[in-house]
Image 1: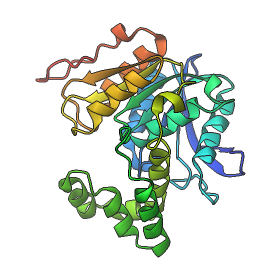
Image 2: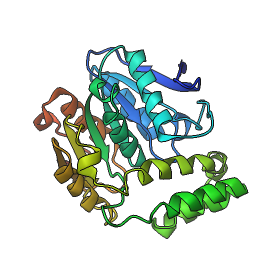
Image 3: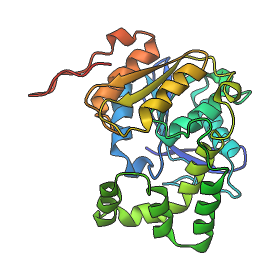
Length: 283
């Protein structure tokens, strides 16, 4: 059942809370995803709750049932995570999927919030490597498109560097209208990523001393493995792992098993379920 918490700026943040264990995790969603539009995260949340963890799966601001107080700022999104930590009344690990991983990093680096975060599990964060930024041009362009009101152009611009079939599939799907409805929030994801792209990660995230797991799929797009490796090198307590046979998505059973192992500090126990006619997946 949907519950709501009020963030520091008065924005209502919608979430589901599952499980009741002492160890907790907050799922930080990727671009264009929210609870009603992301069955994978909902499945992961259920599986983690079944493992005995407390789990929060929420709609990032501007999406689903959450509010969208303007002007947007990355700091306000971090405040949303702080409000969810208040709901848990204790520390939690953050699982950040794609651009949600960058938001998780900023939360962990924020004084007063990071101290309440026990670890970060990051899956394929599309950061720009140091020295490869565009001096904020992408953020300016997408904000201009949002202001012009051309939602289709916003989505097309955001997806321009992704495999063409991804955009073609999105346009031909029944979900295209849902994507257009939250297209303006893609500027939020660009802002979260852009904030990290123009200075040294090691300096920006020096305070992120929690365990960090930077995950990539074995068969993913070529941009992701170098970023995971760079995060592992830049952060004080991070390592990169590759998930066999995975792309820019992972089966919920596989991710839930890995997150459960990471939460308990026993990653060697995160062996994944056997699937008929498929090899066992390991990291």
